Length: 330
Image 1 (cartoon, rainbow, N blue to C red):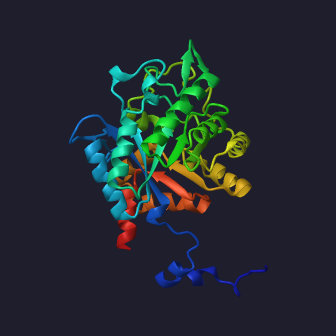
Image 2 (cartoon, rainbow, N blue to C red):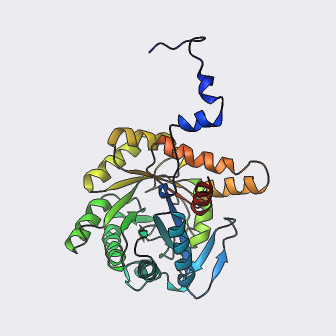
Image 3 (tube, rainbow, N blue to C red):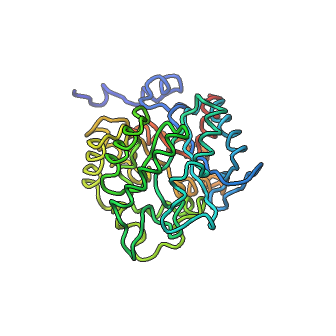
């Protein structure tokens, strides 16, 4: 193709709104969004999260109300994250595999009220462990294989509760294959796995850890011995390939915008459904900048459009209801 000025004037296709809209390559829809929601114990509770303006924790009855809002807005799936009371945590994260834990009760309640809404459950031990790690701890060492066994049990109780998509975010080696085998053995052949295949040891998670009350006691290397080095891209592709080979139906890159190169490389290399998480730190930066008048809300739209352009089939974002409402108005 030989394009040159003045025969080719690319600004012709930008001169008015009708042609800009007509030739737009990437589009957002409410069904692109997955809405992360935080659940807590109690009744009739809507508890603001100070580090994430506009985001709340909800008791189960209020979570059902938010799930109904998602359905009305055309959001097809939510992801449920619990804040577990400190007195219920222990070093082994025992509550994670209890079928009557907060997550499982929330899933059952939402499914009963809104059966058409997809539910994604995080599989990791950090909300349930007193030390805040995603796996079992022995001294300063995370026990990989022993942790995987507990994660399998956690996945089973979530599937029994009605979870549609199991999303392991722990970054233990071999957990996708083990969870797939455990789900199949228990008869949950149709439960999908969305692997946090490339989850980086990122500074962008701070507000989330505040939201779920996890990770404050981490010391030393923190989660760097199992989450990925932000400097590495080839390693991410290796992680993603292994998880696909082990049975992942979909893959996730987390965080999102700082790692769009990883997302695009993964989509190009493997062609599987690929998701990205616009994490709490990304949300907080955008929310605070917009609230301070430093940027308009168009910046939020632009950020999500970039996810789609890079290859995201689905985007986990706390902006989901706001953006779905804006798109409906358009």
